[in-house]
Image 1 (tube, rainbow over the protein chains, first blue to last red):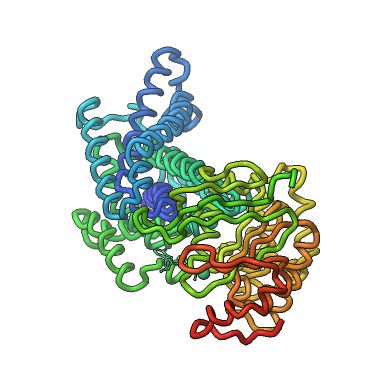
Image 2: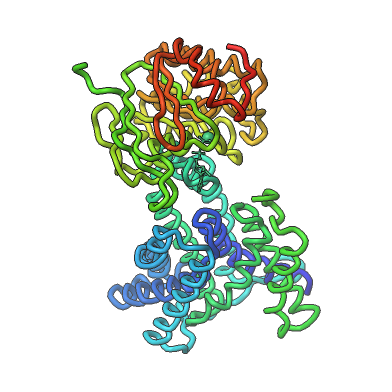
Amino acid sequence: MIAQMLMDGLIAGSMIGLGAIGITLTYSILRFANFAHGELVSWAAYFALSVSTALGTALPGLSASLGPFSFGWSLPLGLIAAMALTGLLALFADTLLFARLRARGASTIILVMAGFGAALTLRSLLEFIFTSKPMYFTSALQIARPLFAGARATPDQLLGLGLAVALVAAVHLILTRTAAGRAMRAVSENQALAGLAGIDVAKTIRLVWLFGASLAAVAGVMAGLLVQIRPYMGHDLLLPLFAAAILGGIGSVPGAMIAGLIVGLAEAACVNFIGAEWRAAVSFFILVAILLLRPQGLFGKAGA
Amino acid sequence: MSEAPALATRGLVAGYERDLPIVRGIDLTIGKGELVAILGPNGAGKSTYVKAIAGTVPCFGGAIMLDGKDITAMPLHQRISAGLAFVPQTENIFASLSIGENLQLAADVLPKALRAARLEKMWAMFPDLASRPALRAGQLSGGQRQMLAVARALIVEPQVLILDEPSAGLSPKIVSSVFAMLQSINRSGVTILLVEQNVKAALAIADRGVILVEGQLRHEGNAAQLATDPLLAELYLGAQPEKASA
Ligand SMILES: Nc1ncnc2c1ncn2[C@@H]1O[C@H](COP(=O)(O)OP(=O)(O)O)[C@@H](O)[C@H]1O
Ligand SMILES: [Mg+2]
């Protein structure tokens, strides 16, 4: 029972962690809480669904199940397309909305409100195009396999968990070992000085949108695969995502992942010990507690 | 002179709000290899002037020429590749990054083939920094921060180096080593524009000094002559008293 609770918590948490990395990056570099990030998650799931369905229809071989998993090649290909398309969507929103506001020197609250507006628009568009009926990547049913101490997980779930861990490591390496990563961290600390160090700040900001959106895309496809695809899926994840980003310390990639796992585990424990109806309150509780007790987060720098 | 000056501003107007310019029409020409000191009381607009040249403060009028090219409308990072480097007075290093990352990110804008050699050159020039590249820059002392900021600016081998009060807040001993370093950088061929409150020390290494008052050039002259000019004493009377020795 406890082992199963841990397993469920880790799986949900790795999904939250992936989304939270996108939030923490855009927050620390663009300097505002982008409430439309949840909609990037939802759009990514629908992008992947559309592409993988189209691929499966055109080339039926692509939807034949891959090994133990519930999906065929059409889904990973759909994911790659979704990462690119979600990145473009984020760039489009930036060019149309956020970049113009930044150029005018708009205050943070204006950017946050613009994000709210963008979220609402993007979500309504999804409902309009796809209706609010839940959709699924595959209709194949997966049997959860016994793992340890009575805990069970499906191969899809384990793949998601592994993918999340691999992506965190990759993002961490990109940020610390590559020129693009150094530029992002420099822009996040001091935009003017980054420019003086020869960094193209506008280009770096576009890169951050692409990066954050691709991670949102992975989270969205994972959520769609493990739960279901709905226009509200990203919106419902928003509170856990922000709770994890802030708990981990804004700007910290490993922090966001670890905090995502903590939020996931706390939700699972809540469902187990208190009741499923309280699940949504867990993130809210964590968010308020961390803001009151340690606003810089677990891994953040004080005063940052 | 047949060749273009290293740096020149023509009627430069700049500031934080268009209807309240701080820099009000500055004409200044700096020849190649010169070391020019910008002096003047607090609030005169010295920092605003050099920030406008570097591109972190908007220009509302006039022009900035770097080696004969008009850079007035150029974005920040392009001015750097055009040969300009600027060390601001404060927040001139990335405190959350390591010493090595501070230099590496500045080197990243260079062609790949040059990067390693330039890094080596900076490590050789600043052995204090070379001994602990992994240290977070935020943990450095004031003097070491200044060294790192200068190294970061020099790594691209700029033609013109602009510094805003590099000696502010440093102990007298460190101040003299900073000035000695600036002099040797200048002798290696880099044109330097230096904003300083430390008037005597600045004029001791400068070729020329200019005095800025209320956003305009009040006076300019040969460094040795300026050092004994009564106007200087008058301007600083009641402002920051001079205590450093040259
Ligand atoms: N960020 C800013 N926003 C608005 N006004 C500023 C800003 N920085 C400086 N000023 C004003 O510009 C004037 C000149 O300041 P500054 O260029 O820093 O002078 P200096 O470097 O000669 O001491 C001062 O009146 C100062 O109040
Ligand atoms: Mg100043």
